[in-house]
Amino acid sequence: MSEDNNHNNYHDSNFNLNEAQGYSLLIQAQETAFDYAIVDESRLLVYVQNTPVDELTNPRHLKSLLAANYKKVVAGLPAAALTLVPGSLYNDDQAAYYARFLDLGDNEKVLVQQLDNDNKIIYKAASSIVAVSDRFGLQNTAYAGKGTIKAIAASNPGDERLFLELGDETVQILYFKAGKLRFLNIFEFKNADELVYFTALVCDELKLKAQDVTLVLNGKISPGDANMSRLNDFYPNVELNAINVVELPGQVAAHKILSLVALSLCGSSEEV
Image (cartoon, rainbow, N blue to C red; front, top):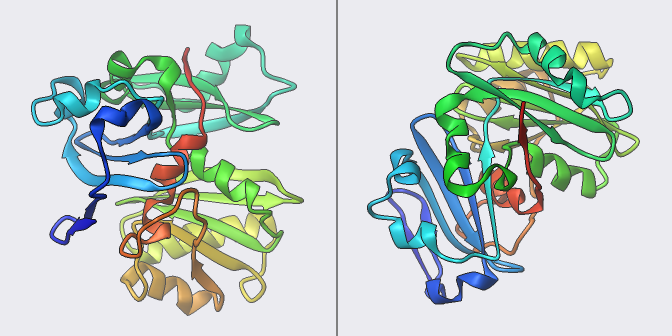
């Protein structure tokens, strides 16, 4: 096994692209770059970060890897904005009406997907990102946070735990009550103080007291960094998300890769 320490990538020496029919290819797309992982039934084989996004639409270095005959392919698409609709109230004929709440821009598209047993998610993404589905098929794309939601739900989360998934300048905040998703939203933040502000806003809405709630973090967060330290100034209970969806090598932190490998739990999206 080996790791590229300069890029925090990972490649299992037993990985064999000729055995792709037994693997899942998982992709997390952003506007300029994407991360990808290849997993078998129970363990991580390949993990690569920050690959230029044009490798998805016009591959040069990854042509063979992307064209392989995988058992499963899931491409996660980030949401610029989202709304949840209870499945019991959702009607395909009203999809365009729900989409109006997202303030759709000229270069954005709206997608709808079954998020869990109770909710539909309607979200918008840049057209350039949705174009990823041209390569993999819309049936093989999913809201990027769906896997994380499924993984957390399966872990029997307690009612006093608030889950934060951090991107470069976004945070997805999740809350479960009695094992069911009760809150989901995405906020843009520029610094640690804004991150604390949005966390406090959600806690106030959910009536969670700072001394009682445990913040569980995953994504672009590290022990002792500015964001985690600032959250700790206001919330005494802050921890990293240790959920493992697949077996990981010791040098790959579970909280860093959770949202990517959890895409293996996902289904598909439909464009509105």
